[in-house]
Length: 329
Image 1 (cartoon, rainbow, N blue to C red):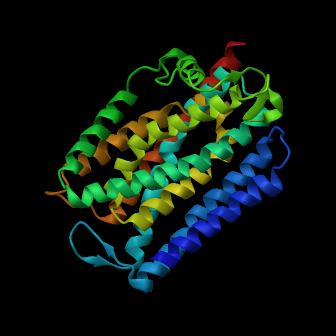
Image 2: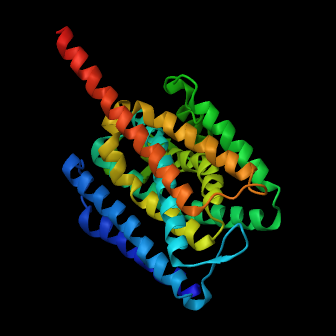
């Protein structure tokens, strides 16, 4: 599948160049309308890639086959369903990532006009980290089947943690001040906007800006969240092509999705519990993988159904709260 990888990453490189190098060259605040259009575009691209997955595995191009947990080779329809389940799951897990990134930006006081630049380079780094971690996770799963029990237990624990009451910003495991102090031990850090630059000259020597330190924290948050997302996608599929492509398409849409949802995260209160339930069920599926096989269409239906329920319940609850507030006044 070497040529598919070359073609896929060439497409990703072109889209990233088009995004920052052509359409967003100037540092400016992204409007909600623009962010929504980009989000629709990225989600549409991610979903439509299921057709490409179908064609690749249905026609066994360059020997592509999907080996399911029952040991039988599956065709294009199954591969497309597995890809869609993995994509929806990764897209959902990115919502928590958006919430933490919003806290990081607020803590570092990053101006809105520079947030797009930080997210862009954060996504570039996330792609590299995710590909390495996904391939490593798939290799571990194939060589050591007991790793499924470890991953499954970790996902169940992560899901249960989400049911705990929310803390404040001080509960963030990546405390920004600590990161700044650690970076300053090795590299000078200067305060200020510096027109969105990551590296500047200060008194004759090169120094990082606080924007660069913010980028480092954003990268670290993605590594932390990858600890949930990689075991989760492994529960859906061990095929490296499906794992990597679904993950990257979900990450690519994270930037525009941030600008759509960052200001309205509080309205999606029940989505957090939907994600918690999803992680617990996926973890249970991994633990029981030797004894019980879940059909691909069932996995896809559960993921889509749980997420849709969380979103709808959040919207209904927000509208009711708004009506109560209006009636009180």
